[in-house]
Image (cartoon, rainbow, N blue to C red; front, side, top):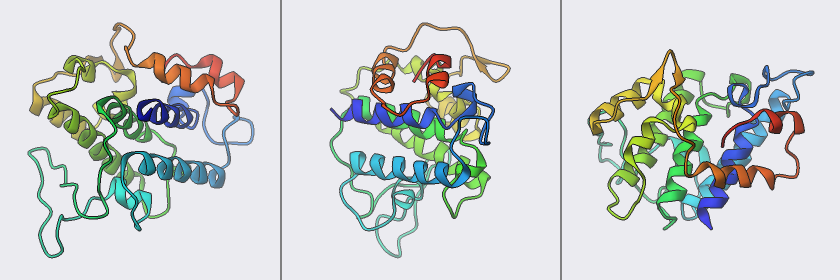
Length: 223
């Protein structure tokens, strides 16, 4: 099931994010992988995500998922009202994964915004990484928003803890305002809300990870 496979990637990514794992960050005593190991892990996760969401392509996963290109050579990339570039062309051919897998992918890109700078793939400044991840997360949510078959409560976009990094960006706030949602957050933290109906899937995925650090797993409450 695509949704569960993407949820497993979300769970693995969470262990690299200090804000979500109760970890002080990369370092010899933190339990986090060193910078090189962290970057390699992020690249493997992106490769796996691209294989689940997109049909085979020659371009690296970072380019296919995070740096959209014009649909045709010589044709300018269009943008929507909040500045999200168009996703198209041969390097970006979607698989039919279902809306829940798409929602989990949006959570993946949102959480990636908070990755420590030591773990970012080559070719990205921290600012570029945050912008590209925010745009990719909004792109996934936009696919759901335009799909009449989905059963996601739109208000959950304003409450899901895994989308909090996105809600703290200008891109996320602008897009939510564009679709008529108001983030349910106070002082940069999510306001209390009912548990996500999709978090059990991500929690179950995390329990199946054989390598997960026990201390962090005990400290996590979501994903």
